[in-house]
Length: 182
Image (cartoon, rainbow, N blue to C red):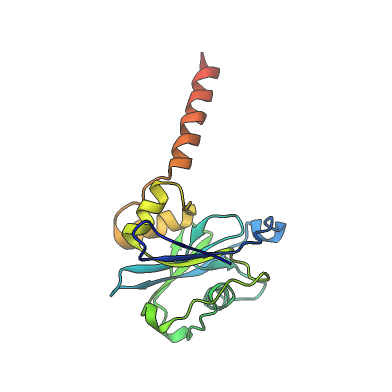
């Protein structure tokens, strides 16, 4: 387990030192469900890094016969070690047609973030302040999932920045397109 601090040294980010390739089962197109967990007192949100190396709220694919709420609770437990009673979750909201998220406010100090085990689906975990997250995205330390970007905009009414990695790839893509159009 490696531990890093954000640029302000106020947020701790834990990442596996033994990151493996993403198994095919994690690239599934099945419906997903997760929980957006935030601490309004510290302005921090809980994010995990998927095996695809993108960061976002804990979430995963629904298993056969599983409800969205059961899937969300299972994924939070598997990825963070947090056991959430279903009755404290909010009404779900959808991102496109393939993901459902629940919202939960929780005190960061009430939750001990465990070290990520080798068998865990998540590669990393962090309680991170929103302003630190934005900076980490801008400088390319954190790449976020499309669902997380849409979810954040839905909840906070503002967009997260694009990472320098995405900007470089977008410029390359535009340059390629222009080259082939002439």
